[in-house]
Length: 157
Image (tube, rainbow, N blue to C red; front, top):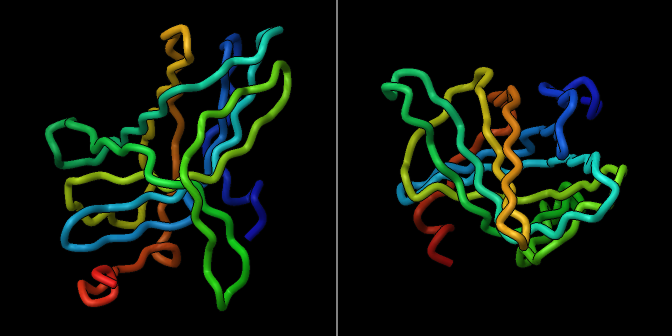
């Protein structure tokens, strides 16, 4: 499916940093939940914004409005159907002025929760090196074709 067709969310009006995101994959094991996201950030300022921290929360119905929090785990890149994806550490990055910066990051939640295929509200909070905070709220779509479970035998290898 085309990136534009999968995109749910959009660019914010009048914000310093806006974003669009797509869910690439969701992994569920008995110990945690991993959410793979492709995120495009647009820095609307005249200066680069060096990012030191990213936090993601996903609002899930039936949890008394308590969101599920995710923390950066690693970067990923799809390389082929047989190889799956290459993973690398999340390193600091900077959002260039008036340009789109794309990151593919896997986020982990220590809470085990099976996310049903549906639309969800996601908050992404960036913190820059000067402790400035940028928060965006968008809708994401989790489809059944992107979810999979990891067996304990495989995960332990």
